[in-house]
Image (cartoon, rainbow, N blue to C red; front, side, top):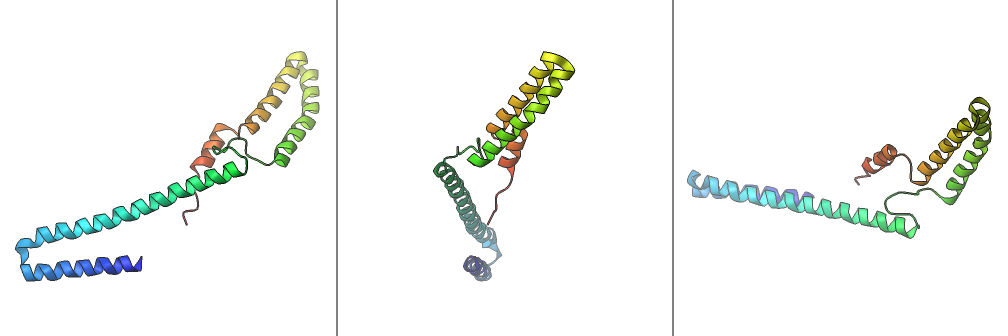
Length: 143
């Protein structure tokens, strides 16, 4: 980066020296030429940054595929995490079923099991839509 700054400073010095030699009547052409070189350098930097981000994204997708996870982030979590979540939901299903059945009968039981199934489906699908979006929108480490 230091070399580019030095090159840009040299270009500016050369442009100013040329302006002194040619006079103010060529000032606009010299300024346009210098600004074109600055724009080219900015475009090169932006292209390099975009290329770096694309490569990083592809590397992340490849890493996810190598680990056996879908690249879209759905179904995340290790086997132990998924198994633990399912076990806890089944353990909690017993008292929830009893509470639903005692208080509201069959409809209460069905509602409690619909909630248990819904929570497990949401977890298996990678979480709730707004939490998935938050994970996707989270800025990466820009190093």
